[in-house]
Image (cartoon, rainbow, N blue to C red; front, top):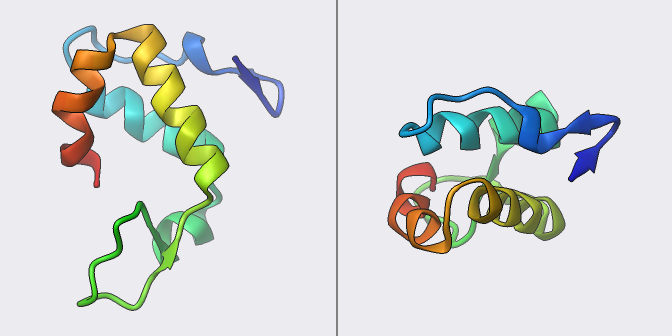
Length: 81
């Protein structure tokens, strides 16, 4: 999958460090401003942040599932929220 000319599956991350891959994906998909002011749903009421774009979040989920597995995504998704 390519986003802004970058092959998202080619992003480097150690095989067992899915959260590092997710962090690299987020760095490509979202601007610094979005990452600083946004949050992956569900939003925590303690913070005054906006929801990050659902389309880009779905791209992240698809990439993680394809590069690793659905089971890995479900297990680690809470770690990146």
